[in-house]
Amino acid sequence: MMVILVLIISFILDSIISNLVSINGLFLPLFTVMSLIIVYPYFNNKRNKFYLSCFITGIFYDLIYTNTIVIHGFLFLLLGFIITRMNLLLANNFINVVIMGIILIVVYRSLTYGLILITANASFDLFNLFRSIYSSLIMNIFFVSIAYIIIDKISYKFKIHKAN
Image 1: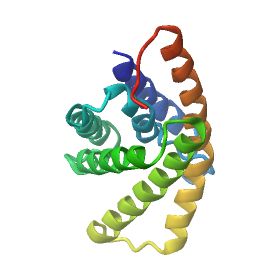
Image 2: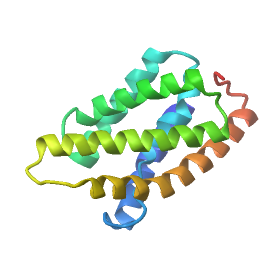
Image 3: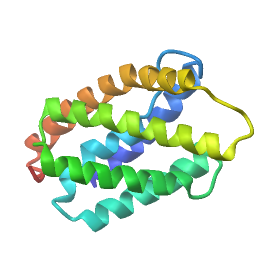
């Protein structure tokens, strides 16, 4: 239940912040992507359920934000796979969650940049990619840091177990 709540809240926050911040601004939210890092330990090594949640979250992201069919479903699924692999290498603590957030932002922005180059008629240069990465880093690292602390305190208080 907490997993669904975190995903819904981050989904809504994505919408609110993206309406308040200019698309050419310095703060581009990817809260839904960052929330996948936060919720993974609460699946207690049930990777199939986590992958399904990633795919479904991506589908909703597609339908509401990008008006495409399954592109983000598969992107989120790939990001979920990367999250599971990083969690095998890194312990679940504050610093590692921030590191995973940085890696996921770079991977997500690079993949979407590649998809835009393949499918769009417009040409984008690498400056646009780097600008989207650094504009995403500031706000999303702040979000994943605060969300990790809050969710960790809530799970400790209500004795919700997570995999380490």
